[in-house]
Amino acid sequence: MTRRLAFVLVVVPAALALSACGGKTLNTDKLEPKIKQGIEQQAGVKVKSVDCPNDVEIKAGSRFNCTATTTAGDRAAVRVVQQDDKGNVRYQVGG
Image (cartoon, rainbow, N blue to C red; front, side, top):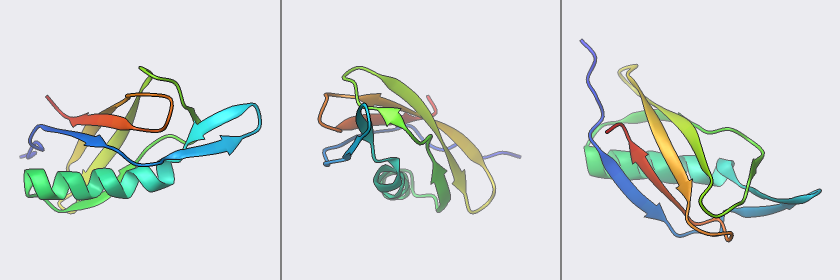
């Protein structure tokens, strides 16, 4: 039986921007632990890992998906929306 992660909606107001050749990219290495912590605090489940794509261009309104995996092995999609061009994001698990 697969346990679903509860709905989580959080704004991560952090400087997650990195400069790269040709533009700025989101520092998903810094974002992943913030999402992990948010899920654990709000949904009350232990999260083994959160995996987001690398090389995400910073662009207000842009969307991408990450995957959260619990210590029990359950997986959930994490939908991330960039709120601005400064690296602030909002994310939602499941739902």
